[in-house]
Image 1 (cartoon, protein in one colour):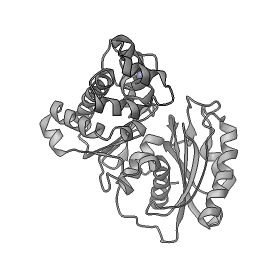
Image 2 (image 1 turned 135 degrees about the horizontal axis):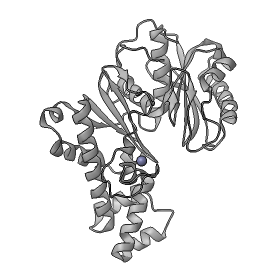
Image 3 (image 1 turned 90 degrees about the vertical axis):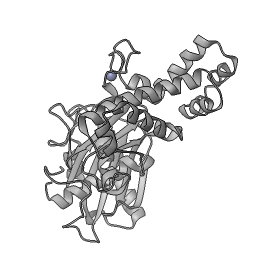
Image 4 (image 1 turned 180 degrees about the vertical axis):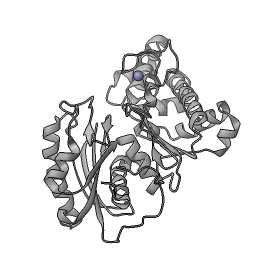
Length: 339
Ligand SMILES: [Zn+2]
């Protein structure tokens, strides 16, 4: 576990050049294992794509991936100093448990850390994937050296990892940072959690696509009809591209997404005053101008003294943010000696 009071982005003391670490990502994209060094460089990796596999199967899969990744990195698994797990769902980091997965069964109060430690005899820590990505960005990415940052994931869901004064913010429920469920409009569309008008109902990838479909139906535009008809090309990226080209439902939906994200992030930075806000996830990668436009809205809406001190940027680690974040968890846990 990450020690209380230890800052993110500090120099790594207590770690030797020869130390190697394992990062495990378990998310909607399946399972991915990377062997990395203290600088966050991936030395070897392996992945499996079954994101709906039940918990016990995932342990077996991860075991095979660890062997494969170590083989590719040319190292013996016995030489690994520590392992970090970035899990796509709520976790109890102190007890090493996953609490729930929306994609797969058996992760309720599941002792994942204990099982991995038992099989490999390597000290292991776990964290929610957005928090792991936040740590990864603070140690190796866009927020390098920052002790106060928010990593915002815009993908199939919306969530954030918050680090304040070098410490993860988890809260007693472990759900701090679930910004996808911030209320934007109490009369708005229904969220995946069943409540109305949450941020995720506007800014998650599937929400953007479904709002576009509705807007096309309402407008009855023939060009956009074609885009909706061709399901294979209807992606967040194609909607963003269409919005660049012409006025119409795509532009309306993108403008609304930018507006809603601008409000949410303005409120977030007013509460937390982070030094850096990092956007990651495939929605943030889909539109080249999204982060710039959201950033402009944030500055327009938020408290000036806060806005002046915040840097808003795209993820440096990109699709590797979770797995490198998992390596970062391992590196810090080893450094801190709190396993
Ligand atoms: Zn919600």
